[in-house]
Each structure stands twice: as C-alpha cells, then as structure tokens.
Length: 283
Image (cartoon, rainbow, N blue to C red):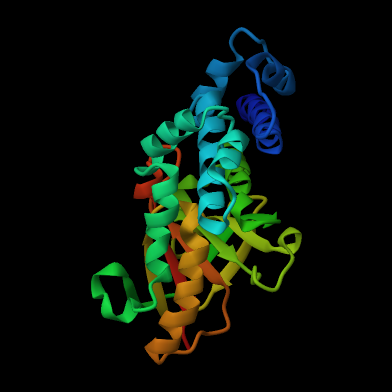
C-alpha cells in the first residue's frame, strides 16, 4: 500500500538519524548534517522528525546525553567535569543545572544521595518502606520484540527501532505494555555479547506482529520489584534484588530470564518518575 510504503520510508530515514545521534553523542551535531543523514530537505526535516518521534532533535540529544551521564555517575567514579564535557557541557555549572532540571538533584548530590543508594544499604531488611517487592501468581505471557545485542544500557536504541517497526506493520492494539527480556548475566558476559529482546508483552490470545521475535514466559510465582527512577540505576536494583533480597527471602530463583515491564516512557516522563517492574520467576 503506498501510504504504508511512504511511512516506512520516512521511518527508515529517521531511524538513520537516531542511529547516527547515538553513535556520535560525543561529537558536535548540527541540523544540516543530520538532514543529510536523513536525505531530507534541510528546511523542514526537523518538523518531520518531531512529528514522527514526539520530540525535537535537540531534546533527543539532550535526553540521551543526560541519561548516559546519570549512568556514569551511578556506576563509576569518573570526575564530574569529565562527565559534563562528555555530555556536551564545557561549563560544569551549566551541566549541573541541566542535570538537576531532569533528575531532581545536581550531579554531586545525585551520586551521593540518588535513588540508587538505597540498594547500597546493608541494613535494607530493617527499612521496610524503602523497597517494593511483592510475590504474585502470573499466567503465561509472550514478549514480542526485536533482538538487541550489546550493552543493556543501549537497549533504548532497539526500542526506538521497535517503535518504528510497529508504526509500519501495525500491532499496537495487541500490546499489554512495553517490556524487555534480558537473557544474559552482565556480570559474566562480555558487554558486546549481551542479548535481550525489546518490545511488548502481548495481550492473552494475541499473535505477534509481523517480523518480531518472541519469548514465552511460563506461568508461576514471580517476585516483582518496582523500581522508581532513572534506567541507569537499574543495575544496582538487580544486584540487590538477586542478591540480598533473594538470600533473605527464603525463595529460589527459577530458570527463566529476567523481565522488565515499563509503566511509562522517558520521552514524556522525568527520569526520577520512571517506573519499571522487574520480574523474577520463583521455583
């Protein structure tokens, strides 16, 4: 159908732009060069981008750079000035203001006091209000999506491709929400070999949309950790969930990969307000 072919063509063009942005976050980016990547008119292409992605080019760049900065603040001891420069800010104060506007805390306080720090608490079992873990019985569910190979922190790029794919082939009405399956253990698997599936949980009885891989998850008892905060904090949530919580719970993890279900989106939700449910199958 011509309309579908036209949408596919524009989605492909804008997907090239998003891949280029992610691959060049450390480099200066300008609208004319990105228009050339998209092979679209320099005069109007950014309006097309916003209309089809829901955000401007610079909102995309800013969001990706700040999310990466948050991950670096959580996962290492790199100096703030170096993180700021990598995020595109030559002035640390400007970086601090931009980061605080999105994450609610300036970088130094975020590193020292951010939500990820609750998973460092050795007395976690005495602070009942800090964690939201529940045990639930679930029917079988199928996750349908696109395979992502590489660091889990980069899975957002595959979610973007997934959204573009579904915009062409259809199938959003089959969705019970955005979800991902993580097949590899990042503690023992090289980052470039990590495998996951980024897509949607299908409603009961629905068949997967065209061109997607699937993963069927069994019925059973699941421990579910609700995490509120930036995606960059999830690695610490996993370490606590599969470490201290599991050890103290008296439960045993079953033989199924970890699953995340996303209750909102980083495109229209501030990082501190992102809500992610992590599912662990129990024996």
